[in-house]
Image (cartoon, rainbow, N blue to C red; front, side):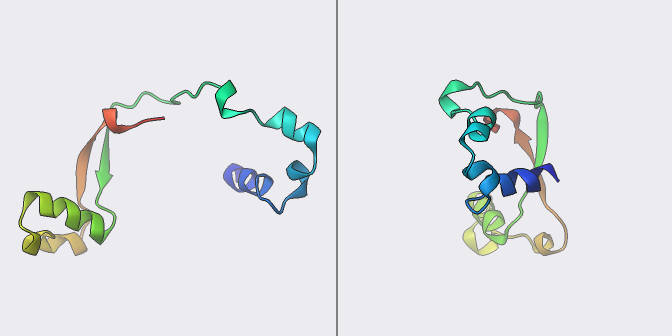
Length: 89
């Protein structure tokens, strides 16, 4: 619900924020004037090969291109251990 409301408010077709300078100046800040914070400490995570293209590209790195996709890929999700160092803000 929050995401839907924010998306609507930031839409070019929504006048409540677009046409009200006082509300805009109160609600919005320039990116240069704020500090972004990571909302949680990320240790490890699991990611999945979500698309056939992604799985094929990765499979090609480990196997020859003709056998890039293992037969089970179309039947079950294939996950891998991600690195917290690859998460950026």
